[in-house]
Length: 200
Image (spheres, rainbow, N blue to C red):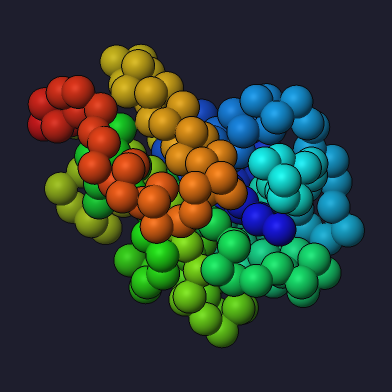
């Protein structure tokens, strides 16, 4: 079984914000697999299906970003998910908009959602797919970053955002087929054309 967790904040007021990039990718995957999210037995929405000869769970925590680990721990325990098959999809303002970066494990990198998951799982040994959300509007003052991640993407960022979401969904759906290592090798090398120039 593979479990993909998209991070974000619930509620219409957060739709389209940078912090909800993980939700966007999970919605794209659900659309491709023709499945719908339903309320889970905890603080999360869940969708499930069979794909590539495997069971796939899609999870969107409704705990708000900073408490994401509560929902993830509930799902991991209930479905007995091996952490190596738990893929967390989240935004990353340290990466240029359009960048997709898959890692086997690692620190939270300053991301509160990842920090909560690591805390509640008592482990950082799970894959994560980071989505670059840095753009021209990103403040130089890191103390203002909390507001930046809750802002909506600008109209002139829509094309790069869409391409990133599509590629991230591609990468997620390749993991059960090709395995994590091969997917990392392929997608960590791909870059959206002119992504760097668009975000300078």
